[in-house]
Length: 123
Image (tube, rainbow, N blue to C red; front, top):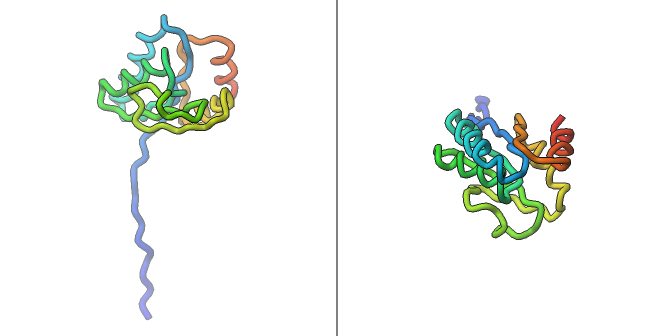
């Protein structure tokens, strides 16, 4: 009886880059980072809410990119309008671990103590 090799489907998975941080004054920088990442084929992952997170998603969408929002709560409607894929966690700030772990790389923009803690989780 002849042996048949299993069907294998090869796919290309985009590099995922997590963008973390906060602060309205950093939105311009975050939007530029999101745009540059998308232009290079990266998927932009954030915590999915406002300020830096929304701006990074907005920049990625302007460049035709894909975005993922990982929310602290359970309501998908709280995601920023530029999120393509929304993950609800219901774990509050513990979702920062998921955001940090979801990126092949992590870029911090602005922020404060929470951003520093999230950077530590990414190590």
